[in-house]
Image 1 (tube, helix red, strand yellow):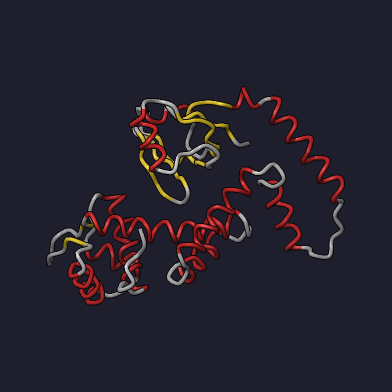
Image 2: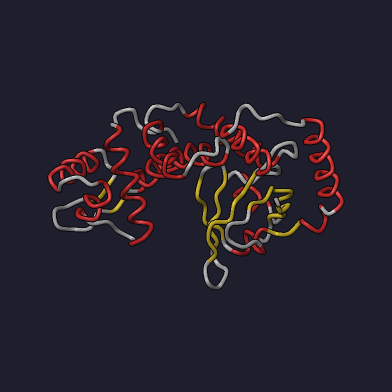
Length: 250
């Protein structure tokens, strides 16, 4: 969904903060929000009232703050926008995480949905395409540090082709179902099986062949597992994850 035009950059920051605190503690307190944003309590009170008037939070003085259903959807999009930009700045432009996080905060309020989608798709493409990947980003960072260096492009292409051929040889060994992956693992969706309802749900969440997916967390008993797809954070039951065949990205 698109973020309502009537939300200011400041209110978007409040929503993002509430969402993150809620993810950690189930609900947020005004003083928690003030601490995260480094603002005074009167500013928090004003912002919470404005968000409540828009139907985005449940708020009453001295009580916990929670997101409404609509607020959850809007906050999810605000977080996606921030993390999509930050991940691009870190993963593609090879910037320091602190620098990237601050830059994302400055950029996220003005970027359009179409531009954000392209940024996320480019980051995914670089992860998946055999001509690029982590080594390509590493070379780019070294080039930024030393732009006058001489590169052997022919040797680089030769190594790239060799790596691709080795991956093709071992591709069957690299295939697994999503439920078998550990946190921090990135993979490419190969196939979604299961009944029609399951396939439809997976498609609606963006889990289609060729899509990049990252496992973020797995519950102690393996159910549920948190994954990241196209900048969105999703929660999957183990039975659902088992229907998704993926190719592990090295």
